[in-house]
Image (cartoon, rainbow over all chains, first blue to last red; front, side):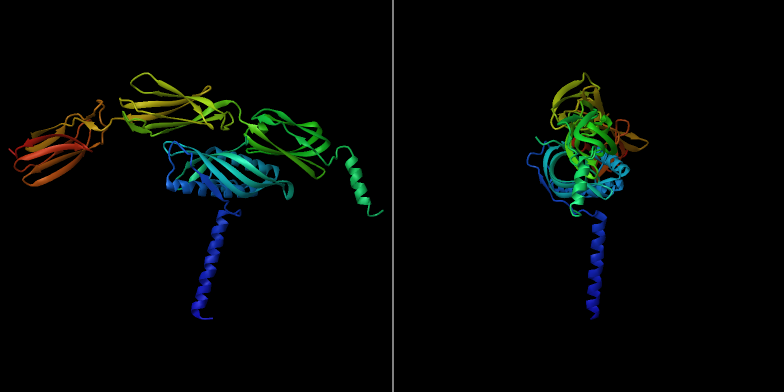
Length: 174
Length: 288
């Protein structure tokens, strides 16, 4: 093999390793699909950048939450959760760990509808229709597995470089 | 016969009391956060009961006798819960929703923290309604907003919260000073302070004096059009045109006035401005 060919192989190998590391940092579950409908959002109209960053950051939030609940790791919540959402999830993960339970979410996607964007741009409320597969395990024993469509009320607030989930509450579909 | 033995054994096991394979669970259709309730079950005997909710997860051994009691502190978080009952390795589950309790907390966002006086709709306030367990209440609730400034009576407005959020826009008062913006629901009130500061300078006027052979130019006390003193640090620009050309000097307001020393050659025309507001112009002869 020529020197050029060997160098190319090395570059490809290094890129593959870097790609794996980036994937590993973001966690096991893949990034779920999130669609945002901001047609009726108000009173502030949504900025182009916010229209892109809210669904992107919400997807990352679900990816990290799924991993945190599967591995019972509170530290994973730091990236995309704050306030009540972070406190409640922390409480839940600690209770899961204590009971020896873990919950695996297989995410089938989210449809977000914007409900309220504060005049100052410091809070956004959204409704999420999520399609999920949820498995509840006690140790390695599967207790329950279900495919379910759930509705969440979401409150997001802007952080330094991303939107953070501040409240996440399941609500009953009517 | 050997082939039928496991089937018979299983059948016999199912007939034994307390080892029912179909441990049916029937939770109530709706439960309020923080209240004790029971989940009905036909099964009898020993079992393991799991409750998985948004803020709490529990596992315990139960002796079944028609229903499983659940303490209110296990369901303080509103949302969807999954109850699982396992009897001899066979698990059955049911889900139910916990609704928020009565409104008792309000969270208030007010922007900006500092605003000019007489600015129409410049203050915005958004109130989020919660119960005592910090569950957002999504049913319509009336939130009373109040604004109290230094100059007079508080004003109140009621808005209905939609999906747990009520909001309002307010015009700042004409006098500078702190304004208290409040939101009240039930017995809970949350207050934020907005500092109202003077608007643009108005009626800028300068005068000049020779002191120790130096020309000092200073403003009258600088106020906005409502009579509020502009804050110290506001930049005032003095512009001089004389035989040496055009010179602009910026000076911050200190104790209500701005002051600069300007050398003059020949006859000078001196004017003053603050932002887009211009003041009077004076003419001074050179050094005497």
